[in-house]
Image (tube, rainbow, N blue to C red; front, side, top):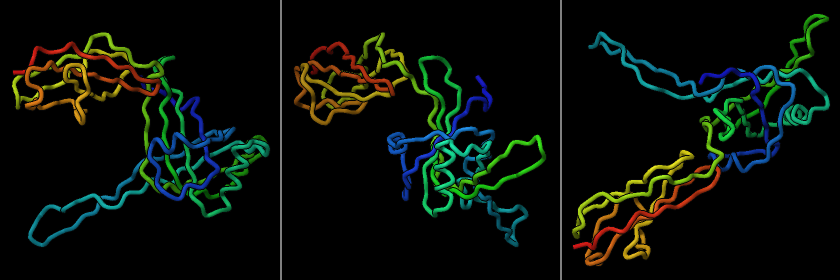
Length: 245
């Protein structure tokens, strides 16, 4: 379902972040909300398209060049006591890089999170548009973003549940490849695997496929599938196969 910007929140980490961060590193930071935000400018990757003309061709050659993470603005109704605005003003006089988080109000239901956008960069400003007697006193900060934006789509808040046990596809002969079929799960999980021989874990056999070896002869094979999402994890184990020949 499409959504508007209504309810979007802006967060800022007051600890400088000099190097690129991944999703887990962003999520581990301590955030402070910037209050009284009325508008957030354009963000996302803008990539230059470069071109070259050769004498022998009649069509311009094109390729992607350097990308820019963007320079969005944050417009606030000035609040001298808002902790987020105070922190932005303090950071704006430095040359350090800081982390930012933008959170939409777009969870599809009560069992999901909102979409979150992470990035990192400089802070400049604020500028003040000023205006007439009925205009609000505004401050505008400019962010100079320096890494590729990380977008985290709504995540389930309910731990995965298996409603149909995993199964195994393949021929039970040495050298054959078996494939784990995860079964049916709620909670939109990602999966990890552990193959078993007569109920005992097979060392290193943690892919979705497993190639039968001599040690599997006359043994039954099963696979444990663990489903994981932001709310937790659960494990379901397939029925054991007939003995390998």
